[in-house]
Image (cartoon, rainbow, N blue to C red; front, side, top):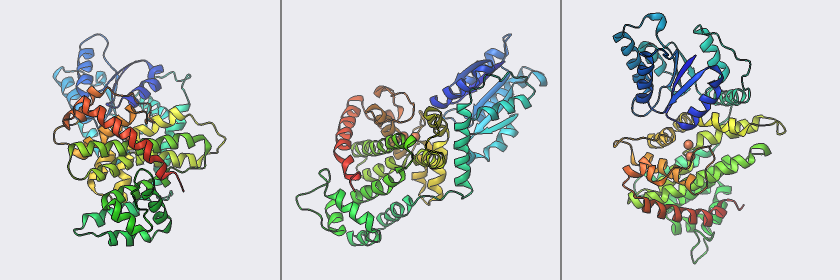
Length: 422
Ligand SMILES: [Fe+2]
Ligand SMILES: [Fe+2]
């Protein structure tokens, strides 16, 4: 059997190839255009594809456009009904509405992310293909299933959402109001005693510290300014999400925290370079861009037996597939504004157009740079500085990126302690 895969994300693409390779000959492409070309070439050869599996959400040619182009080609070539390629589309639950459009465009079935081997095999069998599935690897299946279950839990309200958004979002609302004073901000923060203490400790840490020690919340805010205070409070609130008692995921959670923290610092440095205002807002966005991944991993860790063996590669692979749409949905539910939701939803894309919001580009680039300086946690390749399209769109040269990396690395090393001390 010949299977054609279209998926823009490298990690998901590789995972899919690995899961399906025992079924036959697989060809996988990163763009709709390439997949279409391969489909057309194979159709007029003696070895056409029997199945196409395509992501719906892809930059450039979307999965739906690809599907329509495939069906249009088949009509033009008068390919008979039984020889038409079977098309399975996959998408995240957040975009379920698009499934209807896929059926109207002529797809045969759909699957929801994360991509689960047993589900896809069942779908292929239903389409009338005989499969030899004796050598199915089981690990990915159980990890994919765990991630799906975690998403269901959040969706159905069976899992309580942590308290992160309240103070972060309330502070954001306060800052958006004109004439917000340090006193207004102090009043809000002082409602939370633990937060107040941590803010004062962070304000007096070597990285943020001034000549005079801050003795109370208001003094700390006066010295730091409202925007930096917001960044620090967000860091403290966010850090709480990464606590886990489960030893088997503790290392991974620490890595996710350092990645988020590093991305925040990179976003701040990029923001300073490309936008004269709002670089602290870029910091907060960097900090929470992977919140979907954080909560999924934490939830899975909380719900498994500490002694059970966890396939961490399988786990991060399955989480990767869904963390952007899940993160966007969470932030939306938490009442974050659209700019935050966009950052969570779109930051993994490799290609953007000129209309993309600057903050999405900043966080996309910051995420890439944090891998460059050693703070990655997904199995992503470290990109070449000259290869990052968002840097191009932001007008940053390679040497400017190097300076940004150096500054961020220094700030990360100096300030990480401010958030780890009690
Ligand atoms: Fe991400
Ligand atoms: Fe990231």
